[in-house]
Image (tube, rainbow over all chains, first blue to last red; front, side):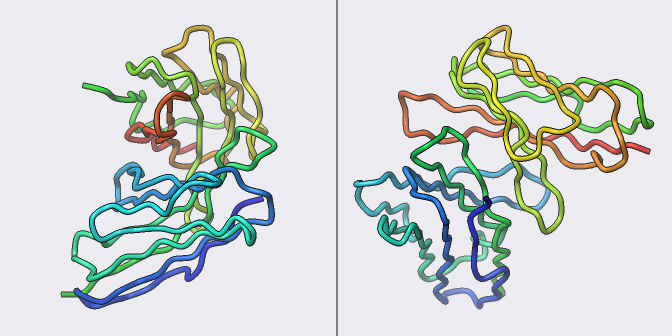
Length: 110
Length: 113
């Protein structure tokens, strides 16, 4: 089952913050986050492992709540370059598949 | 340069005409996978492979075949394409010994008439 992402889409002005959520019904081993620009391949942002620390990448960070099987991606002081579709990918403890959510479209206005 | 290469990048074909989309990676990755991307549905996994001669079904394997005879190559085969296989296809690979990051190819846009 695909993880559920929310919101489906969000429009922000440059400098505002955003949170994208990812929720799974399975016990998770890891959560991946990727960003895809229109017409391009998805690009890796970060991975969070069960029992690991919260990850950060410049102004983009993420958390992983293992008890709730949820992850959140935080984008602070958003920049125009942050526009795109964000996907979470989850890997359960039982298999080696990486299953992606349907994505969250983020549009940053100047 | 480390990369995942897919061919063809664009293809228009007709129903029933067998085709193969090739995928090759030069990073000695063990894990390779195929995804299809359709509007509103995200990336759905078709097949994946943990290593040479080891393949397994993803969530949408019907109508597709794969093989992993060499570590670097993971071709996707459509034996008898149908219009519902019109989609954007991505191949990806990763290493078990690194961060787990998936490296994606540039994508192959397939249209089946």
